[in-house]
Amino acid sequence: MPAPLARAVETLASLPGIGPKTALRLSLSLLHKPAKEVRDMAAAINGLHQGVSFCERCGCFAEHGHCNICDNTRRNAATICVVEQPVDVLMLERSGHFTGRYHVLHGRLSPVDGVGPDQLRIKALDQRLADGVSELILATSATVDGEATAHFIARRYQAEKIRISRIARGVPEGGELEYLDEFTLSRALEQRVVWEQQG
Image (cartoon, rainbow, N blue to C red; front, side, top):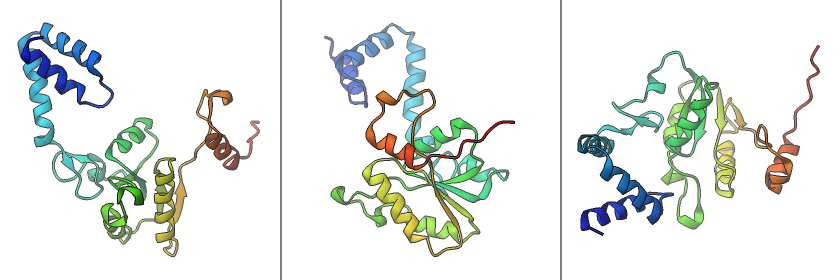
């Protein structure tokens, strides 16, 4: 294999979810594309670190200090959804249903990995709560560390006059019970809701 192709394969294979075979296929695909198209792709990748930073207020992806969500005056500033990573905001925004704002922790509590409250954006959340927040929605992951993070935040602000809620867990739409794990099923039973009769 020519050295430039081998370097491209090695570079692509370092990305998450891409093994050597996929990296080779991608490299060969790039080799067959017009040179200008490949240069444009390289320029877009090169511009990631220069053009994307984190919002000073919420910690999400931003281009100019603040993100579009924080700058949007139509968003409900009194409701804040707390998530672990900026990508979680992108996923929640895809639903199109949440009209509040976000706070990104940039991680979750994990004593084993040496991640405590000081390594997360907890103090920034303290400051935001002083600005008239009425509800915190805890949208951390359903892992042990994610649950511990949610419990920590809930206990930290339990004396405040704000509503603290947790996103629901359970059976996904269109999901078959036989394919779900015990934790998901137990959560679905615990968080069951009253059946609303129509008409």
